Every structure is written in structure tokens, then in C-alpha cells.
Length: 303
Image (cartoon, rainbow, N blue to C red; front, side):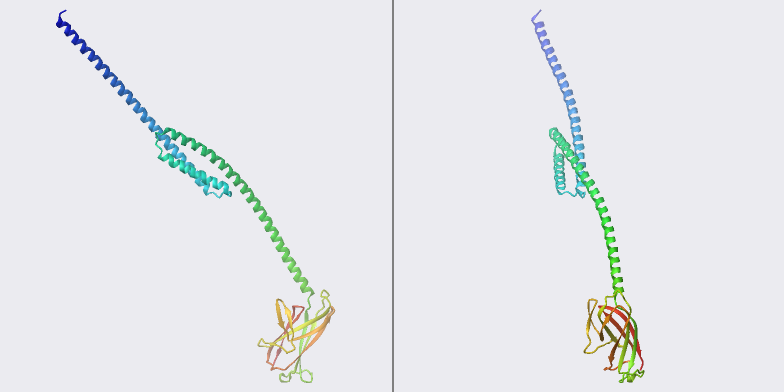
């Protein structure tokens, strides 16, 4: 083989090797591009999965926060439990805020927050159990209180009825045992203590009254008070007129008389000497004894 041929063969061999190396590089580059594209596609899918997991986890935290809001608004009659609920609610809010600012690619922290969510849920389940127990207890106590209130109401009503009955009985006994003026008559007298019908000659009023029989009234000395009222409503009195107790105060009498009452019917007489100007018209006469009003009468004086 000539030198030209040898040189030509060497040149061809170099080109062949170069073509082979270039082809290998091209093939390797193509393979690398395919692998990179596949890995990039897988990475994109993984990021999308992580984003979706983050969104789902965020929704779960938000739902949990809403549940805590609901329990916080409930009327839980337990200060300690209410305080614990508030602490856990704030914890959920803090974790939710951290989750929102955490990148989806931070898989480690996302996993930790997911674990925290499981823990908080377990805590909430326990609080829900306690709240249900409290609600059941409160419902039972409410029913018991309603029952006791109904019983107390019945007792109060019974006591009221008994009080009213006792009051009526006391009033009945009081009325039955009090004195009563059953008869009354007015006589006009002149200066000679003779009956007269002439207005100008009236010098004295004679009041005859009768105390009815009452065996339930305690016998003994009694003071009968009489109030004489003119037609204009003015009470007629004397310097010797006495006062007596009536209801919550005292009244001034016109005349009074001490009698010994035995429980049987008896009569009494009171006299009024006319020392003032008389007025024609209707006069009122009221009797009192032992703090009670025992009779009301009247007479007409014609001029």
C-alpha cells in the first residue's frame, strides 16, 4: 500500500471516529433532554399535587376554625373550658396563617402542619364530649329547676290560698266578735228636756242607741264613741271630746260613753247640748268601739 493510501485511510478513520463520537454525543444529549423533560413533567405534577394538598389542608383548617367559632359562641357554663376553647381556637388561627405563607414545595412543613391538624382535631373531639356532657347536665338541671319551680309555685299558691283563707277567717271572727249598733233614734229636746219639733227651740239632742246581742264578744267595760257631723261635713265637737284609735291613726269623737257589756242586747243614751248655731239639713251619726266602726245612721233637721 502506498503512502497516499495509508494517509487516506488514516484520514478516513479519524472522520469515522469523529462521526461516531459526535453521534454518541448527540444521542446522549437527546437522552438527557428526554430524561430532563420527563423529570420536569414529574416535578410539575408533584408541585401540583403538593399545591392541591395544601389547598385541601387549608380548607380543613378553615373548617376547624369555623367549628371553634361556633363552640365559642355557645353559652358554655364553664370558665375553664371556655378559656381552653379560646386557646385552641387561637392555635388553629396561627397554624392556618402559617400554612398560607408556607410554600407548597416545603413538603416537610406541610406534613408537620397536617400532623398538627390531626392533634387539634383530637383535642376538639374531647372538648365536644365535655360540652355535650355539660349540655346534658344543664338540660337535666333545667328540667329539675322547672320541676322545683312548678312545685314552689304550687306551694306559694297554696300558701296564698291559706293566707287568704286565714285572713277571711280572721275577718269573719273579728266581725263576729265586734259590737254592733242595731238601733238608733234621735229626739229633739227644749230647755225643759221636753220633746219639741220647733227648730228654734231645740236645746238638746237625745241619741238612743241599741247594742245588739253578741255572745262571741268578750264581756266587760266598753267605751262607745260617737261622731256627729253637720250637713256641711263639719265634725261637731266639745272641749271635752275625746280621741280614739281607729285603723292606723286617731279620730276625734263628739260624744263618748262607758258601758258594761255582758254580751246581751243593751241600750244606751247620749246627749248633745246645743251651744252652736244649728243648720237645717241631714246630719250623720257614726259609732265606734274597740277600734272598729260599729254603726252608721243619720237624721234630718228641718227649719
